[in-house]
Image 1 (cartoon, rainbow, N blue to C red):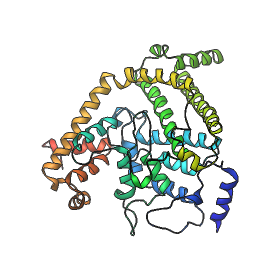
Image 2 (image 1 turned 45 degrees about the vertical axis):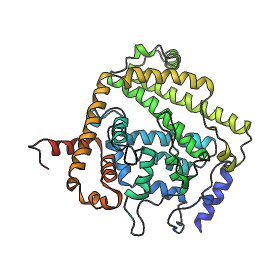
Image 3 (image 1 turned 90 degrees about the vertical axis):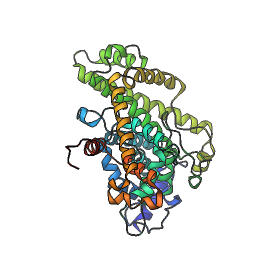
Image 4 (image 1 turned 90 degrees about the horizontal axis):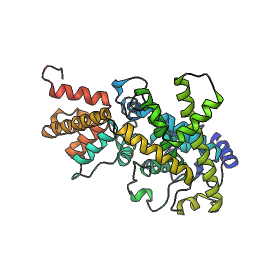
Length: 383
């Protein structure tokens, strides 16, 4: 089979601590091998063709979709994460297919209106099983996507599902699911995705914040990372416009952080004598990480973003408005579940009204949630 040749290529190119496709723990529902795609390549393609992935195009990162075409969405963010993650994985000789697939799937469980939407659903579901976007992401790929006659979901490989659930950043605390062995650390490929996620959202939030005018570049001179990079750019280029200077600064920032991760991670892999996937699993602390110096510099940048972008009064207004949207939509469906579309309504008997309504709202785009709100609350709007 052609797949045997691909296995040999992996064996030749991957580091001993990288996850090999032939070592997968498999799928919930057994499937035969594909003649020219390995398991994680098939998973990647299933994710790209899923409804949930397409909907990321109209889900908020920081700025709601109607505020402008320039700003990142969950989809463009996801693509940036995948690009950064692949770059790191390639240098470390990790499994790029697995890394890319986890990156493309890592935000499938996100709600409309970003973290505000998630906070609203957490509150509404507090006494009904809760809501966590990692768990919901797993629910999306295991149950809610319906594309195959023999099973529900996308029937992804165990390692991809593990990467979705164990996704961990400053904003994500991985839930514990026994089937996915929470006592063990995630693969290096999953760890790379987590850190690529942090790099992507810090830098594109900075870019979008400057473009929106919510962040004033003069204020950024207090942030050492930005100040030092701009000094280098100004020394190298004496006659560039502000837009190009901004793009160059963001590019330098990403490159600086990726280089730091690669250097620090190589040191850790050597320091702890990591020679297998099992060594990775048993190591409790993260092996893919920034150096202490970079962590400190990034903390200053993140504090700046928190104060100047995420707490900007216009962002806070939109967040509060979104919270009300979600809460009022949820309650109007709960008062009369007959308003749900048949594809959701028929699942109430099995999963209960709260969970089905939560699934339905979490799957909405910003635009769809706003349209649905108008249909349900404005008397002259067509339903």
